[in-house]
Length: 243
Image (cartoon, rainbow, N blue to C red; front, side):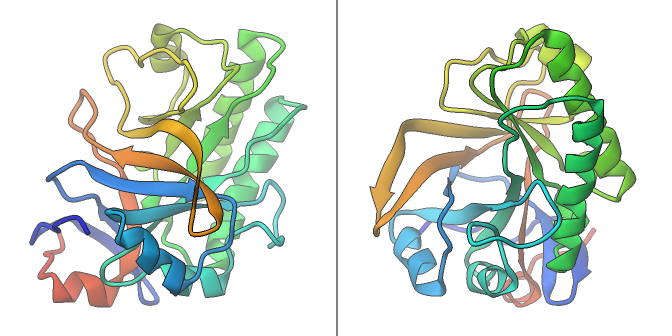
């Protein structure tokens, strides 16, 4: 398991959960997956050096067999393990309207799970876009809707996946996001900012019977770090100070 620094920035507490800036220190490893996780599975991944899991909420409001639910939040968020949230990618129909609807649904699903919105979430941007304008319109509408609903502007990332037709300069200049997640596909670096989350190869690894992609959390070129969700008990036990 990765060593954990003794101090970090706690932003807010909702029920027994906090949104926290990821501590500065060694590269922090974790994973994302489509499978439901249990506390036992999380402990298995801790044995591989993972400090967090990223799980998904739906494009519509509600819980489905593949999406994050209350029991899973309880299993993942512990004193020594954390949660990051992503919304499923849309596979077609990108527009201003669907961007707004998806952004609202992401926040409503997080609120239904009592997750602190200050932790942000990831907008999964990938697919066969018809044009750069379609991609920019969808991502911009998603951002405006999600942040208007309360999602933290500084904590929310966009996943730059396969098929995104934007250059590194366009990713920086034409999207409102302040954080970027690099997919394991061939995608450009984000001009002037870079990535604060990276998906690393090889992709689609099977561990403990489930398929995962490995993630790394880091500081981007502008000194920004991602956030995650953990328990209040974990923060108190580690002596983390609120700011």
